[in-house]
Image (tube, helix red, strand yellow):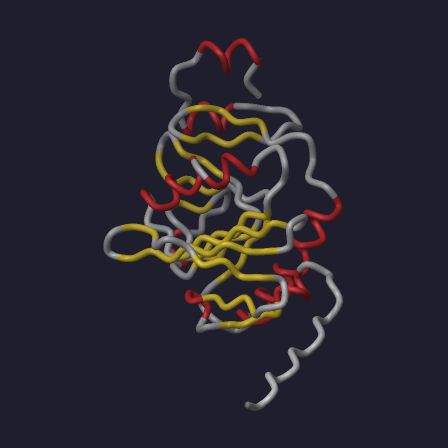
Length: 197
């Protein structure tokens, strides 16, 4: 692992640097800058990751696309290495013994207070440049999700999904999962029909 002094001094780390680091700390590289992924995620964060991964894994059984959960190294370039919370890869040629080499079809990040800004800014820009087809962010505290789909001009403006709505994945054959189930929330009350007249 890099020392704090090395992190502050270095102008750009590479995949080779990243692979040489040892230790228990987890790091990501974005544009060659090292970002520590500590402290460990909260129980709430991990519950949401586990709930969603289980549903995606069940849906993809027997299909060519494969889901992965952190910590899985994703090498997007020589200076960009990330460990998304959940990712799905449909091109088997990108899956190596040690990492994913290229852009996954789907990336999911569950927001934590310490990393939310990076997930919404630097990682969103990185995933857009790398041609990730679908990027989903879930806020386990505010109870919503934000989905970006890749188009000819990059990511769209994003779609907000409320906790009482289904979470639909464009890259997974329109798989729909109730967001409240992923967030471990009670089933929402049905909406009463509007009175006539």
